[in-house]
Image (cartoon, rainbow, N blue to C red; front, side, top):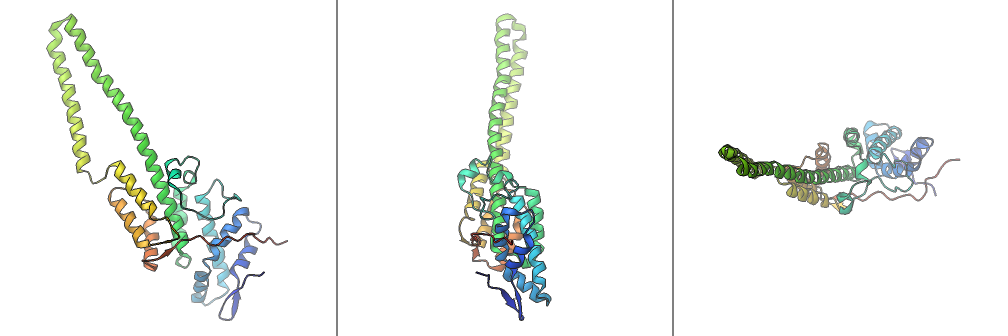
Length: 294
């Protein structure tokens, strides 16, 4: 069954049929279906932009441009399995166990800097803006930031155990030295005790300084930061969301010290400006088969 063409101003325009012809022979292969399903939901914006330009046929070049931008975003989200036939959509919300153990998962392969550049191209085309693409970008970047910080905290904990072992060794050496001096030569006892007391005072002062610094710092503890990230990511779970609530959660985490990717803010701000109450982020329907031309 043929796709029903989109039309305006007496001109029939079938964006999907055009794209099916345009992408044949390109390097996208299995990803063609994902691109077509995603770009097809942009059709209203593409046709509206063509109408504003007064040239209905420009819808074809706009559709091709949109496909290139979406393909770049998708590639930087999934560089490893870009052409995988198993993938049925551009992005999906990840479960907590994937965040906690991201090795080999979708998060570990995201090319953040390149993705941010692709998002910049996307934001430069307001006629492309769509709730689903906005959500894909934000969900992926928030998940990656949460997973990366979690791995950092785990590394810091391992480092603390190493520092503790070194500290015990350093403070243990004077004790061994004192034991030797007391048993062999009492003339060195007072200087040794003074040296050891200086080490103890230095350790206590350092601990007190770090404690005061932590209490007066505007940056929350690692545990609170992780909880803020978890809450922000949880607000992105669902087919229909509130962009205002998502932005509030992201801002709250940022105020506590979370360093989100800067491209998140213009994307979520644009989503709120379009509709502050409803964010329809369900993925586009998947076509069963991509029709190849013989």
